[in-house]
Length: 320
Image (tube, rainbow, N blue to C red):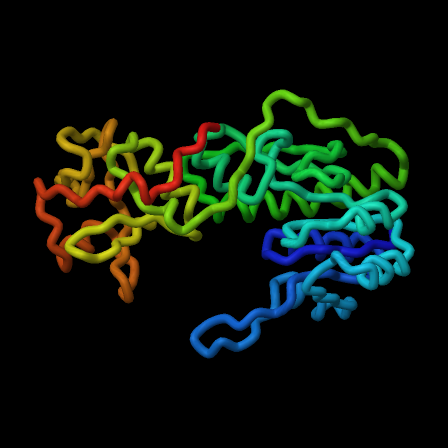
């Protein structure tokens, strides 16, 4: 097929690689423009941009797709289809209508559950037992288009957003090749999404990573995994913001925020229900450490009560 590829993040990289390896003619790659990053504020290309250059593909980085000139440029490619993965721009109707088979999206959830910006994180945070990838023909709604193919994977108690992201990216790459093959052979048809079971994966904010010890420990443990590596989770102690990189569940009593030390030397914080055992921590400007070693250089006395965040400053807990 003659294709355009629209993607930006690392999640999209395996799909672009798979399409090229499958023999599709990718005539244009659309991605976000380079941005200043790091201490030197040097312009950094997106992961998709880097891969496209290595594959000698034409790259376009328009700031907006809303102009008629951009729509005309897209139409002139005379595409069979466009593949859209974690792009970051909303596609206007002129773009959606241009390819013969439409714009096909790879979405990191089992639609209609977790439409929106952060499906992987929200699935882990909600305690879902599984997630997956859905390919769909895009319409003007937010992840509301008719579905083409879907495949699921389990979410284990050890999974983080990072591990699920990587597995879904590879799954999405396989699924988009199968989807395009089915469309070419006319062996698959788009199926409307059911009206029941819709949930929204709202965009993540940094303030969501603050641990509120009044919440159940099970919820906080899921948050640590769901927000790893970004935006991360943290709490305040001794006037410092301490990052929590790994945690587990244990028994604990007392006022939420009360600290204790488990027999294995790891710190425990009492929560609204149960206790959160802190397994890996990081101070500002320091290296990450196992939490038992962390205690040897940071005073966190048993029986201390950690500050509770101001509820008014926290985003609301969203129902699944």
